[in-house]
Length: 189
Image 1 (cartoon, rainbow, N blue to C red):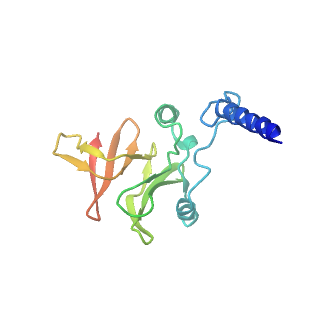
Image 2: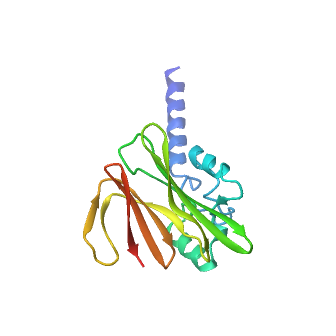
Image 3: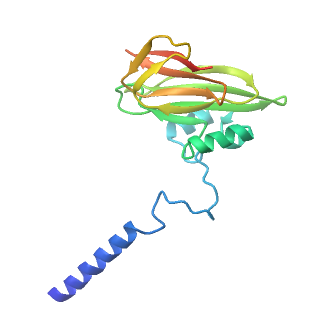
């Protein structure tokens, strides 16, 4: 009996080691696999906000111009250009920035909202009112640290994450919270 236990234990160890070094390990790239749509698995607050915006849809990679799509894939291949989560305060859960688009009379319109986690639920902020755009802006998160306005203004040290609303290769505005108040600064133009 003890001998069989040792055999089973050895087989289990071999299986665990083999799984750890398997080429199918998560994070590996299979060149033959279809591309993964990073906008598919939406957190419930994001999915709800999109569903509550009739006529609008989440900004997806295919709505970006070819050059913007290429730059996005090079910089953030694991992210969806239409939403990001961020810890904007000490609240229990993440906040979400959501870029919504709709095609209206052959022009793309965009609206960007923020669902700010306040520890009880979400407060909704409008980061960009609905407007016509040639190239939609993308949203992404950046971690705590020092930021400076593009014009060389004073620097600001952030304790929590912040949200970037970026028109690729054009302009970027960084949104952050200080003592419960949303603020923003243009970080590139």
